[in-house]
Length: 225
Image (cartoon, rainbow, N blue to C red):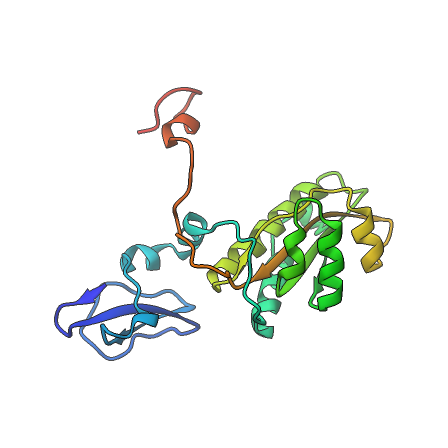
């Protein structure tokens, strides 16, 4: 967003709580974001967006723009980001707070390649920077639902850090469990590959049914206004 008084652009940066020197602004950043001024010709950092909307609800913005990413750069993801993604799964809500899950973070290249060979719907796991294997307790009734919530939490958190992902598999991944030494009391729900996107992606360009076709007010089929 252009600052008419200074001929500069506003750019969102992570892990800060303050505004850099400049004219007063009504956009108040939430913790974890930082707005600073840069020169218009610094193309690598330029972002044209509605800063007020982003700062009002960054969680919704991640949900609005997240896309399935299947091709990744040959580039490591920093340790603190990897841990933050795993922690987002750990912090997810679960029925009765039973937390019936276990997450295995895989960074070894040879293991990633073996996982890719085992995933019929996700051979691209082999080219990811790392993967998180999501396992759940077989004997817990709502474990699949809980582990699914945790998986989405990790995917959205990754997107907020500029890291792409996609869900691969859906239960019954016995060979993956054997590969990683996961006990028989668990089933593997999914393998989530992560990495920086290999190509630029059009954030927010989604092919979705019309809002009015899937949302009603008070009773099914009654328009939501």
